[in-house]
Length: 98
Image (tube, helix red, strand yellow):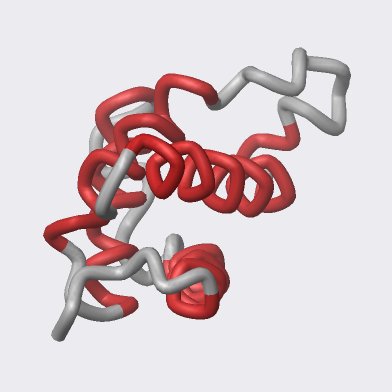
């Protein structure tokens, strides 16, 4: 990400997709829309080091395992949202150059 506007756009993209994924169905059951705000920010902070979808899955896994339950979110469990995030960030040209 080159600047603050890229960071804000990445927050919006990752936020939208993590909230749609909604692990534990917290938002679906009435939790506030910003329920995963801290986790989203931590994932976005790791994006500059992500070279492929597997790296994004590992980032999501690490952040959610730390926040909710150690080992509760394997990279395999996080692959689908990681793939969506990677593709969306790629379309927005927010991924690091390979």
